[in-house]
Image (tube, rainbow, N blue to C red; front, side):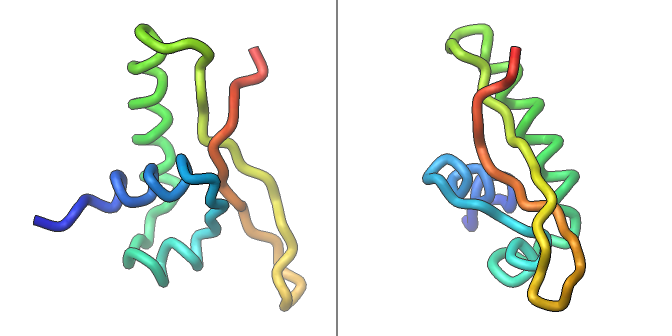
Length: 80
C-alpha cells in the first residue's frame, strides 16, 4: 500500500526539505498542502508529550520566478 500524502510530506520535511504548494502537487498530487500541514502539526503536538522540544511545521512567504508570493513550508522548533 502506498504511503499517505501526510506521511510522505512529513518524511520530506523531516529530511530537511522545504515545500511549496506547487511542489506538493507535482510530487504527490496534493492539492491541499495547508490541510496536510495542519494534520502534521497536530500529530507533532500530540507527540510532544513524550518528546522535547516541540517541533512544528512553519511557513514563510517566498517570491516565485513570476513575481507571485507563495508559502514555503519547513520543519522547525517552536518559538516558545
